Image (cartoon, rainbow, N blue to C red; front, side, top):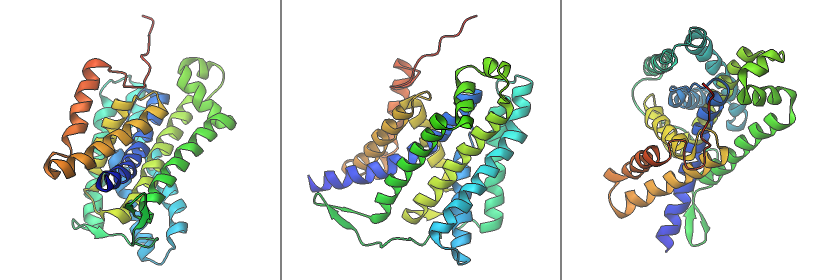
Length: 291
């Protein structure tokens, strides 16, 4: 039971990282029906930029807003270069290939700037575990869960309380109607991409002290976060959180009780089942379009 509790806590921390990255997928899908397949690379760049700032003497807590700003700028560039032209010509696959291509470019740039070797990110908290319910929990894992929840709550509060957030919600509900009401939907889409990459960069500096930091760290995390977004539902914020927790716990328990070589299998199997049975996701809503 003690081991199972330990695995569940570790799975929740891992799942919340998946959820934050998947939340970025939801942000762009909501406003433009497009996805940034370079989310994992935004996470990777955020972690490496954060590591550079910390090594330069910047305090970890002061580094976080700087990395978030960098992530927002990077996301805006992706939208401006890779997504906006595809939306203008109504290309169904242009934005897919563009975001993937930009992700590859960012990865190659990272390899040339920071090298191919994985780097250690210094932890801002003590690395000795804390006893909780007979399980050892790292302080950094608690920070990951708390930071992920606070990030998603802040975005949700922004959407509900601010005039700019209401413009985002209006664009999500009906892009054409929002445009007729005077909302600059193009700017809203740019903002959603900036916010999406910002959340990924934030996730990068949260998870970096728990793992090694390198140019390849974002590929698997981005793919698993996409699986979480599909499993939970791209239209459901709560579904994404629950999907992340489900996948995180499934991975940690499978890796311990079966083999670490099989820890990626449960998520992929669940993804295939959800796509076959409920394509909108476990908690998503099926969109009905008039033709």
